[in-house]
Amino acid sequence: MTPARSGEWRPLPRRFYQRPVVELAAALIGQVLVRRRGRLLLAGRIVETEAYGGEGLDPSAHSFRGSTPRCAVMFGPAGHAYVYTTHQGRCCLNVTAEGDRRGKAVLIRALEPLSGLETMRALRLAALDEGPTRARLLAGRADHELAAGPGRLCLGLAIDRELNGVDLTGARSPLWIAGPGRSGGGSRPSIRWTPRVGLNPASASCAWSWRALDVASAAVSPPRGARAGGSKLPRPRACPRPQHRTAKNIP
Image (tube, rainbow, N blue to C red; front, side, top):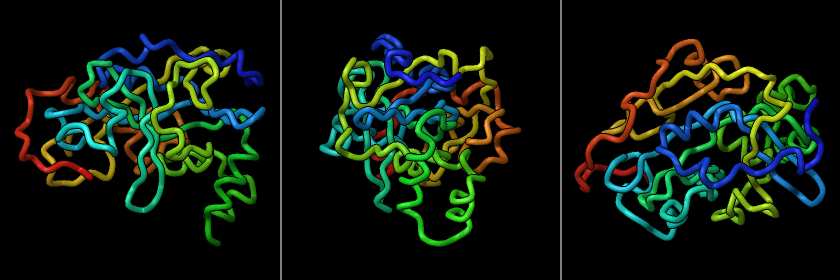
């Protein structure tokens, strides 16, 4: 049975996020992201993440060249939401990691919806033009697609820049991450690692296998063919030595 009250989905403590960023990316698989909108809870099981290694270490991270107004939250305590807007105007949700104030974070890429499906569907439909995806959602045949991708996830859970910097460990937070509880099914997810999605191929870290996903989930975002492949361990397992500051960053 899916929990129906926020008290059954308690925020994970800050120490959960105070671990190496690649380790956190794996630990988040199977946890539950919860968004409170008034008395309504929108929630989903995390099935896909990407790790980003921070200042001077990972040229694909927003924080590679240091703190800016856009990514300043990444340099704060672990367990906060970093919400940014893409060039296409879509929001993406990240979780700050480690707490060493070096700009490390994990991107939440996909969820399996658990609670508030009708609202998620309405929010997604409001942003969709006519087409096959809209038709599938209207027919109720594509609930696994409601949050299959970082932009879709933020649309479906009404996550925007107003939530940038929110403390995910706060008891009264409008956004938090909880343990799987009864929604977890009692089994540990089978995790595979693939390269991260949509990065600049000129980046020195473009090919790192730092995208973690649950291979059993239909809610993983494209490219879904990677669900059956990938490796059992991230590559590299941790950030290499600091890169030169002249390496190209991803905006």
